[in-house]
Image (cartoon, one colour):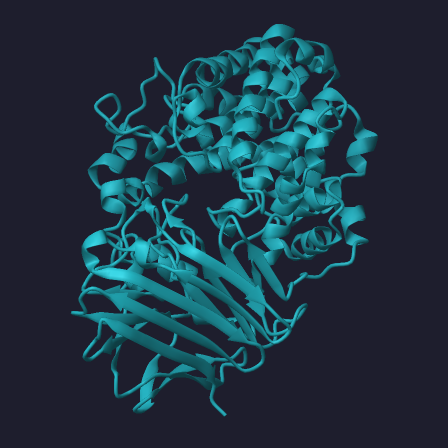
Length: 627
């Protein structure tokens, strides 16, 4: 991404006047070719708020993140304001009568007078903030950057109309964007920038923030030297991000963040190519970037469900338009087909992030509707860097078993202590699950408090507790001796997860083997070698009630699409183990997110306690459909 120096960027970057990523407002012929249905939807939404009173956001709303850990009140007020402004921008572009200009000006001015463009939950911790932004030292977060691109797009499309009212409107947009976005981007180390820039772990924040900063810089910055400097900094950050991204294309943040991680990387490449007459096309030729696209369809289970390790949701919406364009850019027909599938099923709504994507989407309808639509559903996938396998009974089909299992380490982005965890679906419906994340609050992202949340801990994953110890967070807690194998009839992952537990637990080795016998069953085999054997229990998470039918056979009452019940058996050694079934209480503020994401389901934990564990112990389970 850093192929070009600042000096070279000076020569290849288009001027602001010559940068036209979308048709100008005056090109009415082009806008007649845009998706009229989408534009009419935006118009109706804007008309609902034609008399909108732009509310201020009280300081006490921002302080809630410190006082109660709640972030939703502040974010709801802020998001509403952005949505109203966005809908009015689209409405004015469509109608072009000036009916929304005064309200757009109110929205711009009101936004520029906010103390902080981001959200309070993203403010750094410490005495400098305590829930309120430092207006003299702006912090650049995801939503501050989003605000900048919204204002830059408003300036791009409606600049002449704004100038007709007052030249101070556009001047204010540039002043605030320079102060809040460009200056901190260039001069302030941020934690999300990585070690090279004084920060630490790289995650979706890098491409997401950069895409919006890049959009704003290309549209707003008229000084060639400054534009080149800002764009070069963005490419430096993207270089760091892609350098640390695994070659297998695996997103350790999960499918829920793919849209904002590799998806945002594609946004950057698109904007850079538009701003330089395709000087960054070479990035799309790399195997790593092509693997990033494949990841999202390799993690699809079916029926809307996806593999949701870590802070993932069991069902994750996919931006079909972006995926289609990404697939087309790297010549991946499966990605294009899956993008078309999700695009055609989408519900049109006011975008609250990645706003510029909606402008690309406006001109995509005719092309994408001619594309074959399907979900690729590969039979097997293996991510050697991420150490995740996915496998199903039959490729290109949701019928039968689907299994995913993971190794890795316990310092992944949005980490759960889950080394060796696995999930099982049948006919694309959940059987053994990863609960995933709940509602985000302050303690979700405080390292010393994150694992107070039950769903982040190994004992609430499909994993064992040994000598009353569970897995710990940290990169040193990891899988070793990881081996993957796939054949016509089986797929399996074998790994030693002993190092995921505290050193004093008394585990010499813990070899876990997860095997799919296609069309038949799933087998879990754990082999323990312990220096002392005080206690061993094996946990399984499900969304259905369960009961012991007879010693050695426990039934999970799986619900089919038609609401009928089919029993799935977990077969175990009744002489060795005693099962216990618990319905998980969902009562905290974080649990509200779990209730929402697993709507229509309850959460149960099945625990098999080994009665008299030995130093050389084995636990064997078979999961199959009752005949």
